[in-house]
Image (cartoon, rainbow, N blue to C red; front, side, top):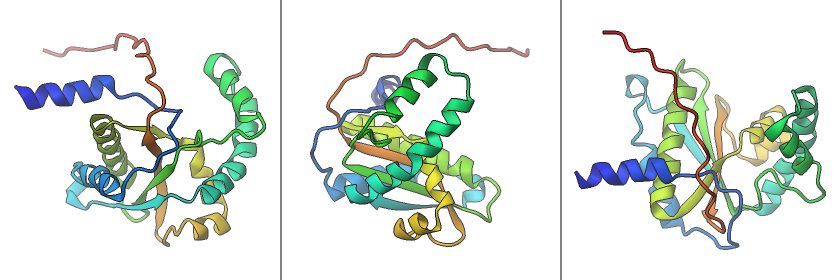
Length: 193
């Protein structure tokens, strides 16, 4: 079935992109991504998500500058091997942005009053990232951007409404790289018959 292969290909070929061309994604394409996101399943069909699209790089840099010392402190406390050590070195570099100089940041917000809001918004985020892969738009979930929740000033600048929190901060733009497929460990599967 053709559609099935397209979905499988998008899943297998999606990568976290950390290098972007300096080119804006048109609003119509951004709306396509969000439309794909809102077609995710949600508990009791409550659709607990809302979105903030940030094109203001000055604001993105402000969030990055706020997050970096928090990330550095957190990584220093963690085991510093492999990727953790590499990321700690990158974050400490002068001029490093946690957003990898992507042109856009999409915040997927979840409602505080719904039990499964984070799960539903994560499903929405995956739809958006897969839609991006199928449209030639690179994406990367930047978890450290959630630290902005600790700053009332940043939350106000980001226009996060009361009663909502940041679930999925996703950078996106046109790719300037094609990363190799990482090795996937075989899953542990228990078959019950």
